[in-house]
Image (cartoon, rainbow, N blue to C red; front, side, top):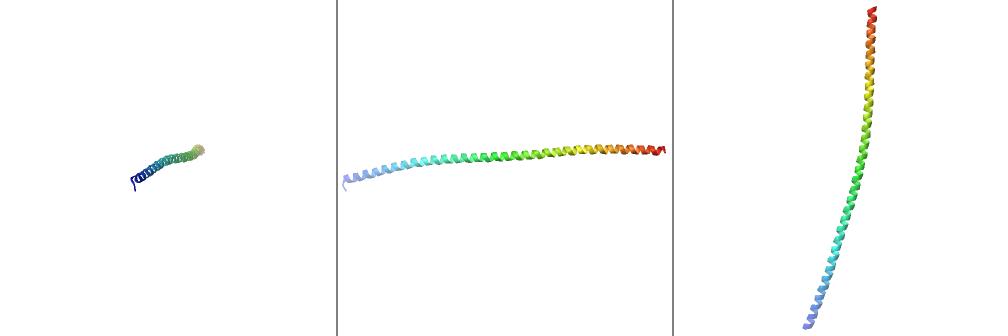
Length: 117
């Protein structure tokens, strides 16, 4: 090979190296773009997950509030029943006291009747 041919081969190889470098830079740029897209997609997915978690938490909160309301209604019903029982107990005590008083009155009247005879 002559010196001119060798120089021509070197120029060809150098051009191939430049072309390959440009291809590599283009690929690196694409890779960087893909990485950016992946980060964005990951962030979007995280936002969606957070939104779903928020919706789930809100649903659980609503369920808990409903359960609390249900338990409050039961409690209120129990208090009403307890109040009714207390009222009935007081009525029964009053009737018992009245009956005792009438019994004592009857005994006293009987004792007086016996004493008069």
